[in-house]
Image (cartoon, rainbow, N blue to C red; front, side, top):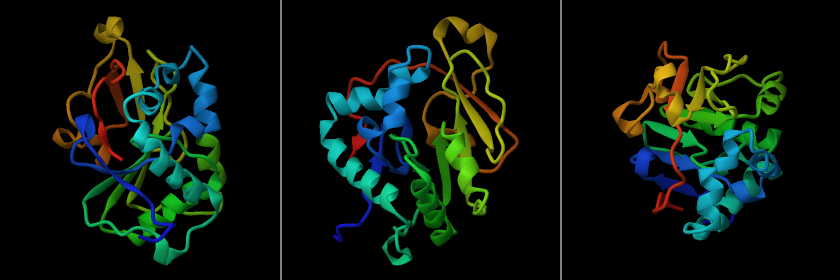
Length: 211
């Protein structure tokens, strides 16, 4: 295994059956800042909860990914090759800088038969990179709304918004995200659904995936 090889996670739980490239939430300055803000969904971050408790073993391989993806542009022959229909960018983690997003773009360009989906709150990075780069047709952007019980407007370049509501607000919204992703796949393809709404989940208390 080359020292620059990215670690590919095999997700389980809600994301069972979906491959993902994850990064270390604990060392992401944006994530830590958002986590300290009690007015955001990030204050209940499942990823930080897991990495600080029962999934500490994931921190090292995901930090490896964070370092490689953010340090510079990865050479094409060192980018991973996928033999699967869909891949999620970040079951855990968030964009760190422009290099990170450009490397994701290049991964999608190398794997034209795989559909990639990136959940992110970093509109600033998306806007900056896409001034000079084209978004591949097999890469979809989903804007992750940080404010609970609100529906985000669809930002430029994004295909969908992902919004979280609390249990007491279920009657005021049309929830269309529940169960396992493989049983739905609305987020993992091109369709006319632009608004995803999920009821907030409690922090996980059991193994979520292999690192």
